[in-house]
Image 1 (tube, helix red, strand yellow):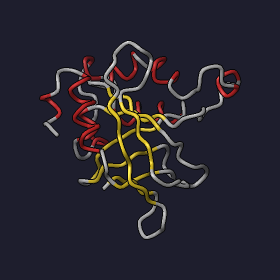
Image 2 (cartoon, one colour):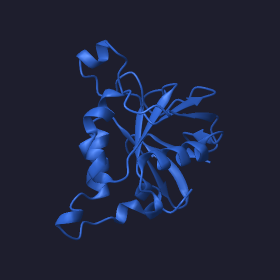
Image 3 (cartoon, one colour):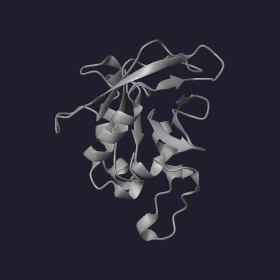
Length: 174
């Protein structure tokens, strides 16, 4: 994958991320038999209300409180402000059309949805501290907001890609 500052368009980032993740292994806890090969499909049609990347797992993965949905989706954005701006779109991906979970506004919905930006795939995203009014939205704050809405985040931490749904449900990708 390219360096984060090299991405100017969301579609370039999502296509590279999809290719990078295809046929990787996703696991809940190392050493336990809770891993699966993932297969990604980059959604190429735009403006049709579907997330950027569809991820299918070959075997079920049980996290602390629930199973990872098959498929789950990854929505890519260029930066934190875009994540916030398109939050309504991201929330909509959690539900099947006409779902009772949507009517009840069930926090986790019918599908797991994960969000990522190029900057979140740099090591140590948690050190992002706002320095001026143009950079007021810290990664830490935004991630917490997404977790409270039932949305996961794909980040890189110490060289390992991880999907956080909260502090206790963390998946690693190898």
